[in-house]
Length: 110
Length: 143
Image 1 (cartoon, each protein chain N blue to C red):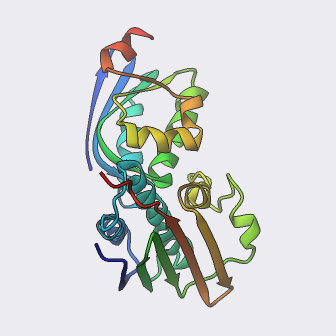
Image 2 (cartoon, rainbow over the protein chains, first blue to last red):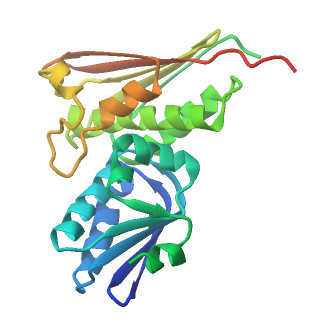
């Protein structure tokens, strides 16, 4: 897994690549949580490079969603690959996290 | 094309082996003419079963996981066995959103059930758990 973060105004952009499973779950969680400490409001996950996700990866995303929404922010996702989107959909996460084709579209919606 | 085949592997419980197991499953399944979605479903279901063995079966203690992949005609079967803690209440464990850990979604069995055609769980407390799951792949039309 590769992960990079960028802060744009009050949005934390998280760009992640690779496979989100239990092996990387702790690092994935810690990297986002550390970046959230800078006081951003919203989180945008760019999942363009994510080739696989299972319930361990989804659990981390759900946990960050709860944290961000409890503080009045929103969580968005962009560039989800179709195979990965099916897993998101079955988990119910697509009901609470809006998805967009590109980062720019997601940022414009805020 | 092979109509019968079987691979049996055994590896130490550890998160680094989850990806190896699911990639092996995808390669094994590729003996049949599957769609990308079918392959993805198999990878997710296998990933959940192996992750459960590592997280819940052994609870991060050392242990051995056995993984058997079989092909018989149009039926792919994946069997994951651990010799860890076992599950006290299998019915409860299979419920959506049941999890013993608040950071997790309790979706492991939901994914296994949704993405496979058959799922059977046998477990004995203190002895371990065997998850047996199978997917039937209809023969591709001739062209």
